[in-house]
Amino acid sequence: MMQSRRRSLMEAFTNVVVGYALAVVTQIIVFPWFGLQPGLGDNLALGLVFTSISLLRGYALRRLFARIDRE
Image (cartoon, rainbow, N blue to C red):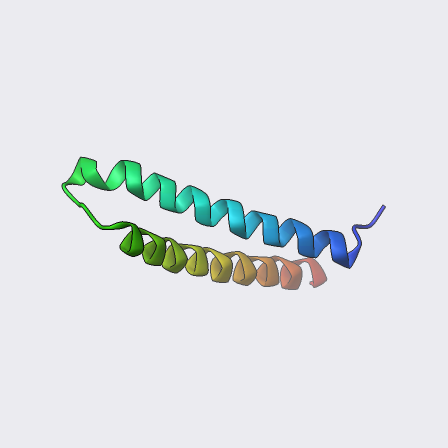
């Protein structure tokens, strides 16, 4: 059975929210290991940058594979 558009949107939104939270928590844990001590605001901003890049990467790869499947 094919996934509905609403279900696809819910999945994509959940993926973004979980990815963002995971990026921020990872930064808070890992950055100090490398001597980096950004504040919470900086971690939230960096998480947004990483999440945006991840979204763009995922979209580009999805479109690439869709094009390959058409050939």
